[in-house]
Amino acid sequence: EINNPINFIHGNMTHLKNYSTALIQLIELYESIEENLSDENKEKIKNLKEEIELDFLKEDLPMLIQSCHEGTERTKNIILDLKNFSRLDEMVVNKVDLPKEIETTLNILHNKLKTKVEIVKEYEENLPLVEGYGGQLNQVFMNILDNSCYAIKEKGTITIKLYKKEKNVIIEIADTGCGMNEEQKNKIFDPFFTTKPVGAGTGLGMSISYKVIQRHNGTIELESEEGKGTKFTISIPIIMEEVKEN
Image 1 (cartoon, rainbow, N blue to C red):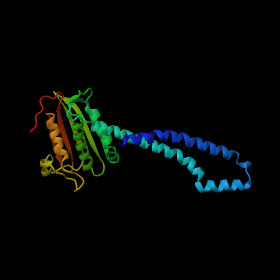
Image 2 (image 1 turned 180 degrees about the horizontal axis):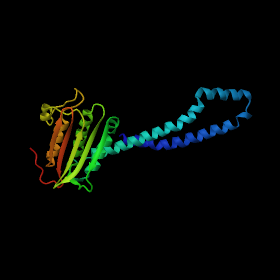
Image 3 (image 1 turned 180 degrees about the vertical axis):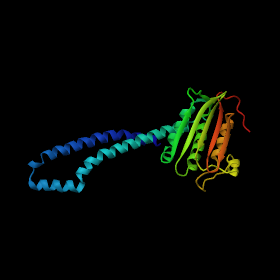
């Protein structure tokens, strides 16, 4: 629903740029022979130029069109990331490229992260693809990264590590945020538990994440110290065997 009109606008921006360039060229041609006009007509043109601020318009119009073009390009990329993020493969086990999925999630969170969070990536080379439900794993990454961003009140760092360990791939996501106390750590995977203000979170994100990792026969562990930050360590089998759920 969003993609079709955005593509329509994006495509028309090229025509708008060409049309505006042609019109400005025409105006400049008229200006070059302005001296041949009567004094009355010169005065009319001079007054209209001042009224519409022609010099500013000629300078600003190309920049406006360029910014609109960049905006629609950014929107198209967000839509593509959202489609990749929430693709309808929840009941189908696929080969999942974890660095690519995390990158998609970071792109979606870009506006939240860009002003206050430095992302540090430490990915082992030649990581194997893992068997799993890509859309569900993306939701786990989204929940953890969004919480990490929230925990960083001003400026901070989120470090993401990916590496192979025996028959598993390990994902570590560590932040330099406010951390958690013992009570919060013990309840973090409980349904409806949240440290966010009323209306800012449902308290379901981490309990859902726990279930998703369990569905992959993996583990999710938490280390946190109040005032120093939090680290989640996720282990996912490279080959998904029989799925066991409580």
